[in-house]
Length: 298
Image (cartoon, rainbow, N blue to C red):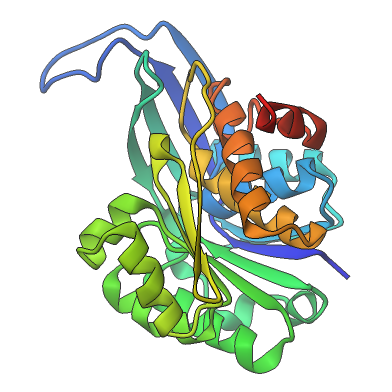
């Protein structure tokens, strides 16, 4: 039995440290470079595993290429209890080029490639049946809703969805089947035009048991059983904020396995996500449980 099965994108990320992104027709120099695995589901899975959760991952790669080889090698090196890497012949593997500024903010150019080709019949249904929780992230809008419905109707798993960058239409389709829904404040503003608090109430009204909105450098807010919970961010000297939200999701699901209340959960997740910003790339600086608990108390 897996504690959580993560389904969605894994990318090869090339990160460049720059003073500022270039303007059109401008050439700039990078001060540092890193090649690492990213992706919404993949980074969340890495965080969950780092904290001690029994982790599974279903993701997709394209045909033979250096990017495909990089992603396969990274997943193999993790030693996950379960993984299914679905090859999509004739498609390209997901890739991101990320320019990281000195204050940790970044500009991302992302190519989704083969992740858009995933269909329900490609997934290992036995893995879905053997997971206590399922987390969806970085999937094509229509497929995300279809998979959410399948999980509710054919498994007993708690379903978590990363709502970042999902359209309003896709969000409406999956909310009735979702237990934990966590978008970021920018997605909320774009799709609903509501405050984070009103958005949480809206999601709960659609059937979500635990709704949460991440607020970047303002922390996070969550809503459960008619009550709001808030937690401020932790103070770190951020190198790179890439993957901080994905790491928040992985930490949040780990907290569910511990049975912690939402107040402690949000403080833990903010501390974990904040500490990941000390490295270049989403998984470069993922802290341990002990390091995160210590940061919470500062």
